[in-house]
Image 1 (cartoon, rainbow, N blue to C red):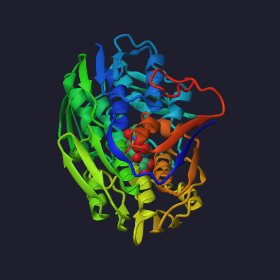
Image 2 (image 1 turned 180 degrees about the horizontal axis):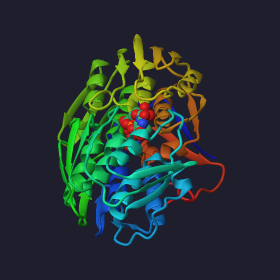
Image 3 (image 1 turned 90 degrees about the vertical axis):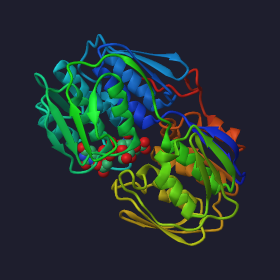
Length: 433
Ligand code: EPZ
């Protein structure tokens, strides 16, 4: 088993560069299935979720290769298989989003239902309802979805909830549909905007992306092209919070402050010094942060994915913070891990009351999901003594070279393993797919 070990108490100093956005890249890779000519994506992060999506696309018959360290060629001109493999979809929910592009382009797709995970049930009912509104005949047999259609037809889709994934998935399905599709109550996340901009670069006709009302005019086909993925606002926020908790002074390069506003404003409210410019964010804090309340909401509200890292910071704040998680029903399992480090948190249903303590203490803890793992790294960096984090495969899903990046900021952090691990040229564990 692989672990991360940290000796806490070192203020992070220096500059760290943010990688490409996991949640934009995954949606865009699924959307590349629509293109009848090769596509080149730049600023792709080396993380295991990307490797899983690459394996998924290869199983469909797509050519997927890194042609430069962070540039991926995807050639879906000769897709030969319209059935997605069970093990890959259940491993990563985002791979379910190949369903719409396959049906839109080939009239058929058979894809396993993604499972739930530690933060919630993660249903896909909005996705299925939207595909049916676009004219697909969608049937479920056991744990798989079969979707078929002649040519999809534009329609008005009203999402019960501004779901990021459903908005992305249905936007890709609508791009080749006949006529006009309107998605109402659409998600406004930057990753939705990035997907729309990618599709437009290939010839799609989309308006209103970034608002709750998106209009897609169907086109007969998408050409190939090149596109650069936006920086990962969630990775950037993680480093900003780590800098604050360790009372450090860090410049986060290649971040887009516009995408991080809810987090940056909340950090400032907590007394953190934040200065941003076009290409990055400078974060400093001398003493303890002030307690603040956070309530997760769809973008542009406070992002649920930063609820966990932010709570780690609030554990050592002066005062009492209230953390309310409105997006997922089970995103507090990491609280008991923070309690092992001395955090004073009481949690009931979707609310946690965090009473700030002077300091946390190193302990052996377990990552329960991607962002919980990030929260435990942050807590360990600020704790007194040594922290060991287990199940770090969760962290590898969404953070490129986290240990090396933190070491470059002065952190005393190591990755250890009981047995040899197969890694990519970039040092990322290559799960056997
Ligand atoms: C995306 O997941 C992100 N993942 C998540 O990030 C992020 O937490 C989430 O959006 C919210 O911002 C990727 O982009 C790969 P949703 P997604 O559909 O699309 C419910 C991370 O850490 N819902 O916006 O799956 C759902 O249960 C990951 O990077 C339905 O009920 O999230 C949840 O309560 C974790 N039915 C809410 O909507 C549906 O059909 C928001 O989910 C779809 C969603």
